[in-house]
Image 1: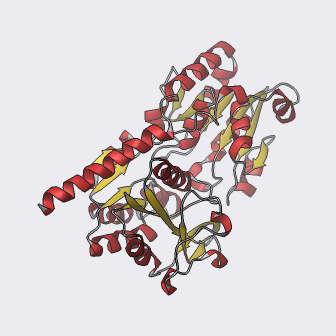
Image 2 (image 1 turned 90 degrees about the vertical axis):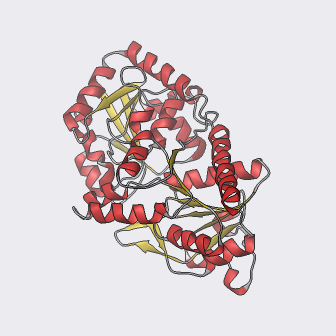
Image 3 (image 1 turned 120 degrees about the vertical axis):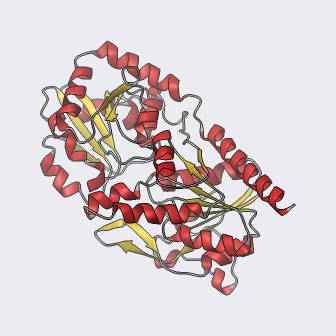
Length: 387
């Protein structure tokens, strides 16, 4: 199949949408398919020249991409420059046309993805939309309003797709409850080779917790919707060291809100895997996750998880078996869950071992093949209609 992946984010961005788009492209290539990626430019110099008839070829940050990448001009989001928003451009339609796409894959469509959807509809090419971002939750967080408008936007975009793929059962139920048709479940994979308990590093642990403290970690964006300040109670526990991995606009305020915490900044690849495996407890605090890849990476690393009982973590964390689910936005509940695990090393070990066992079959190859199955079903459905 010839696939055009239109994504709102792609590496070197570090987030769930970018990572999933990369893994999707990589798997399609490995299975003998022909994908290209269309994504916002990281800076103006990383654009391609499709408008002048050029061929999409990876360059700059895309030199090691698994397939060609077409970069569309973009601007940084005001107040959050790590996030870039695509500008209107003919490159999306040009990429789909020149690639002779069989199917268009829309990763978390909102701005660039809408253009991809429009182009696919005009060209009569089937589109698969992947729901990944809780825009309604973000509207509540950032503007304290606009939730209904966000759902209208989500519904209008996804209703135009042949199918919408939801990453978790709570996300699937939300989409259906808000009138999005033709929704199917497609969860995310995890690199169980990179993320594994054997990467636990005693030297790193001594650096992070020189007095032998229990290491409690958070990994992710430092932004208001992640509510990382809920770790403040855990920071106050005797014998506990909180470690925060990531960057974002909330970092200055969090350094004040989390006294004694170690901030490591953004880490990726094998270094990140070593940090995950060296934790004693992983805590995710954000209540707006449609999936939550970092929870799954912690589980693959053999680390028990504390997460809010909302969204994606409901599918991932088996309460009392692989970790603890707590009420969303409840700092005391986070603190108490951490304390209960800190007091019981055997329980932590049992939760961590079961967490690893739970995710061992969730490889990117397995979920990538499921995605190809969804593509095949969509193409078959179109063929029946055409007949």
